[in-house]
Length: 223
Image (tube, rainbow, N blue to C red; front, side, top):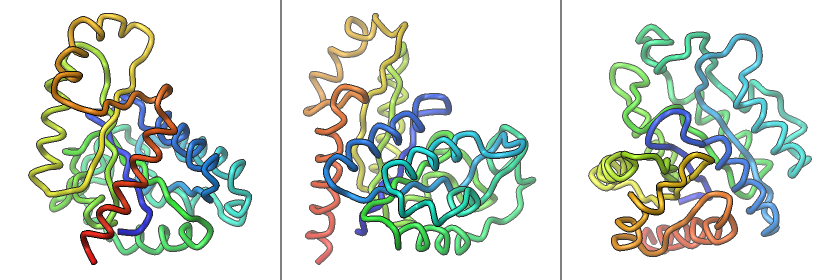
């Protein structure tokens, strides 16, 4: 497994971009040249908002990326804010375009964070779901989950999908203002069932190290 991390979430607007930025910062502090890639972004009118934000931040911490352009970071931009299947009118997507873009970014990096669109079961075309991308990229997956009521169900469903697909993964919580009741209604379950627990914004360094350890573990098992 190369040093690629695919960042997905239990749904849209859960915090993938925020998480990606926090991990870029953590990996950079560890001395790694960090790159970022957003294969598909929908809801784009002009420049891709998430991709541009990620690209700008990545260039600040890895100046070598200044040789690239936004089109190198976001391969497919679609105007309609919908699943790629709908936004792209069910057209077949050629993943070799993604491979070439990723190879170009990797030439300037030690590790690349790949941000997905929506959740794992978002359809890309007639054959592919977002779940298929980390397998195609041979990337470790980080699942980001919310802390609102229902997060237990959403987290377990997404983890089940990853386990069924045999995709190596870790997961982390992204709690926000307004999620104060999480500690009473959901955290007791997670504490009882999972160890360790990672929280974005609090455990960034520990999570970054755990991701690197998991990549090394997967690489050693594949030898």
